[in-house]
Length: 235
Image (cartoon, rainbow, N blue to C red; front, side, top):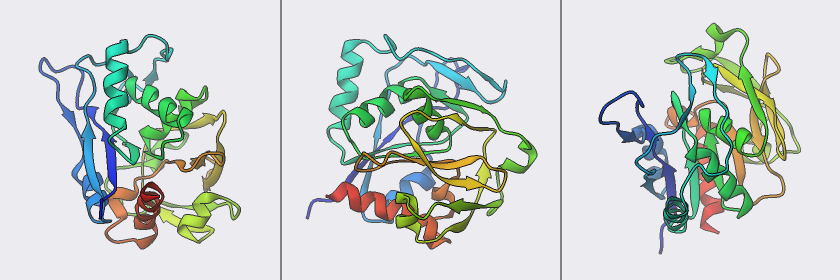
């Protein structure tokens, strides 16, 4: 039986290095393997187009037009065509090609799961905006297992996945959603910030603010996100 192939969009480690690196975090790769699918890395073009630098807490918005050459776009399309679903990972830096991938998946109804900074890419790719979160010392708990609860809408896809109206999540971010075009919020944190966004008119187009890959080995609700995503991709 053919296994599901999940493409993880590789990220640049640091755009200030003379010899930059691309990477995928092990816990995200392991979350795919442990649920019976095969993760593959989708490598970006050589150029680095950093548009969010968390260290400076500034945002530089780039237009989607002309970010990639036609050849680079085709390389991405060919790589994505090998996959049954795509993941946009979290991280410190976001490259603008991640916005291109997000919009491409949305327009072609390719299953996509976006995590933390990946949610920023999804929001911006569809014309939305993000903002610095208030009470950052609460939300940027890099090594905490749980930080706060989220409240989940019952009529949402996310509720269908986790089967609860409240669950505990981790938190390591300084941005939150401001405006979200073409997307619907399905969960909020206890400060009223959007935690989960989905596109009801797509097969699977879901973004979460927390990091389920960190908790999936110890919390079945977090693991179910990957399990359900892979199940949809299998179809």
